[in-house]
Length: 271
Ligand code: BGC
Image 1 (tube, rainbow, N blue to C red):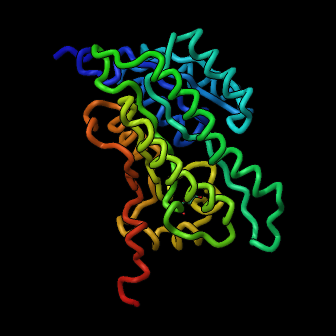
Image 2 (cartoon, rainbow, N blue to C red):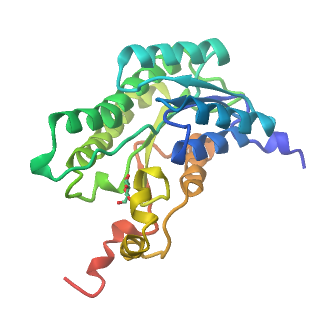
Image 3 (cartoon, rainbow, N blue to C red):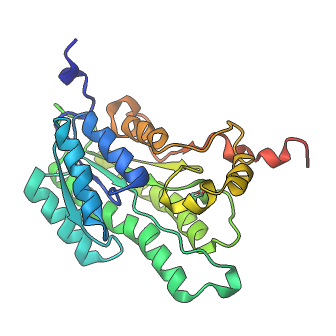
């Protein structure tokens, strides 16, 4: 069997924001394994981003690292410019960069609010807009995909589950839902395919304080009917599918990947 021919994203170029670690890194590596050239975007950790590039190149893929704060319009435009210089165009955008700045509501500062909304929501808007402009300019390249471009928003189960002590984060993810769906409605005639993935509790640095402490890890596990905390790979596999033509008729949808967290297991013997 010709492994090269089986690669689902061969000839495509992808940008994964916030991909120097965690879910973004796993997605970037998975897209590269399927044949895509990948931009590893990072905010401050250039060293880790370069490591990801090295790992991708070591397995025969192609990648570059580009630093940019996705909440800043000028940074985002420069990042896309650097990507076009290196790879010519964009076929897949994964809007992954995200952060938490947790605080009880009464103690939450305007800065906590603005930083999280800036990265998690404005950042996704800015990158989606730049990608969409290029998808429309270029149009469909039939040899590589039946769509003119694909955007995947990385949301969270907290686009539906309210989260005390994290209202900035939950509000940003709730915003991502209708940002994604509204853009999907608007850009469908251009054959741009847009979806979200809503991960549950995935083992990354964002929630390390929870899964690395046995007591809180046990409590967290009680929220997950499937009985395990997720792995970045669980999200990466879903992202590859959404980026590929295998999901061509899936549009404007949120794929929840959470081991059943949104089944609200607290209601099993209650309510
Ligand atoms: C958050 C994690 C949390 C998970 C489940 C994610 O979106 O970033 O900190 O563990 O949702 O609550």
